[in-house]
Length: 265
Image (cartoon, rainbow, N blue to C red; front, side, top):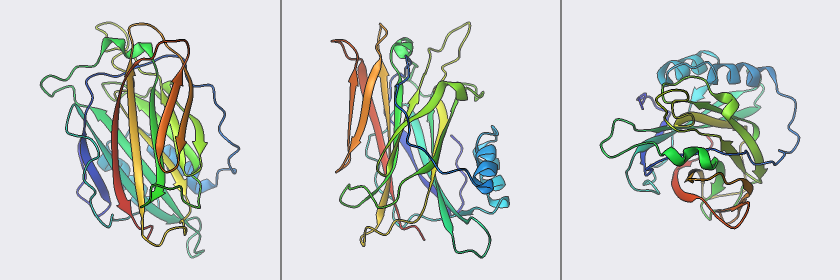
């Protein structure tokens, strides 16, 4: 994945994944969200435009978003492997001069097809992938602000829009849960849907920690030779993820987890 070397480019790291997945999406309803303000609508349109990372950041800056720096690079929470992930955080006033600051928390993921030994698993169709993205304090606890207007933009191997294959499945305090209905990398038909994409949400500045905050993301990859449905997924605090599946069998699972520190300037 190309990385823009600007002040606000947050931690870019490698992913440990040997394959990825799809199935019936988690049937969970997100809580009601406030009506989207105009600046959120226009920002969502930029994030879903299919632009390259560099062009997307430029468009967001032109729309009034300010890329904000991390305080400290946190070492990757997973070892190097078959992909990469990056965080980008930005801030903007809802109306210039209002003092009503909003923060845009984004993560991009991509599988590295070019790397030796890395191949997209044929069992990807057997179970859904999940992405968990949230803000926590340094004690792994939830913060006193909740994400709003969460979105996910799923792509295929060639970067084509496959947004219908992703969705927001729920919120647990200051974390968002997303599902990704991925597919295999077929000679004819789908080209590894879910092998790359973006997820984001908007949040007000939390005030519950005096020791700083962490942005944490977990990409839970599963694969199975038979179809298995996800019945529940939960983020509990201190941060921990649990998933349950229909029937007596469970899919193969690999987590890629990463984090970066952030002060909400």
